[in-house]
Image (cartoon, rainbow over all chains, first blue to last red; front, side, top):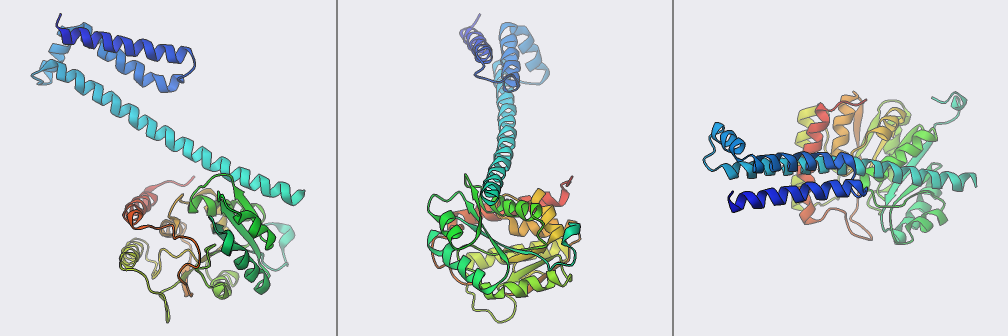
Length: 113
Length: 239
């Protein structure tokens, strides 16, 4: 087993455990953990099953198989970031509605005394 | 329509969004209340100074936003209020004294006469003293072209924040209003609603107090953002 393989296994296993622990302690909501969990499982499996990674990389015409691992990692990071942008937009919208509602309620309270 | 309102004269609300305008807002509200019978609403967009108190003291209704929403979110709050309180027309002018309050009846008249759904006050119609900087002129020309090509409205001042709208548009905007830089976007919304929009000449001045919300750096962002949301609004669904 090469050193990079060991590093990859240890790192993705640590990430997986860390995410699970955060969810267990309710520091990370389940809905935001799904992409992280899925991504770290995929990377862990491909690190453990080197021949799977090699044949997948070969099938896609990638000469250096570990770079396929990077590609997968980048793909998941992109997905997670888009997910964040959507989540932030939703929070922004909710925040705006609440701010408007509070202003209207304060005025109503003052008017009706 | 509120059935209890029939036969009474139309109710008009003048809306002034204000951010950090404690020094000028009171005088502006007072001059509006001395001249006109309209209700005056100041939307305090999360100011940390005495804007809300100054406006209230001068006799305005005040909507006090607990945090800064930006101009679109602030003005939309006024539309929510106007819709809820059954106003027939809303006139929106700047809270910093850039718009000539004497021109309000002129902007309102086509709405009250039922000849238009929206009236936009233009600083470029008729004789004008308004002198804009070169980047601003460029931006205005660009948006003029964009609006005129895509809607069929003949607009000279697409970024004007001096306008009046009727009940139907108040209702629509209270649900759908762009969150920042809303004026250009509003034309595509009006176009999609088949609203009748007309322009009338108005006077505008340079700012008396405070700073304009448009700095040099933001100008580029402004152009890109407005163009994007404008084009998206063309293909968006409104439920």
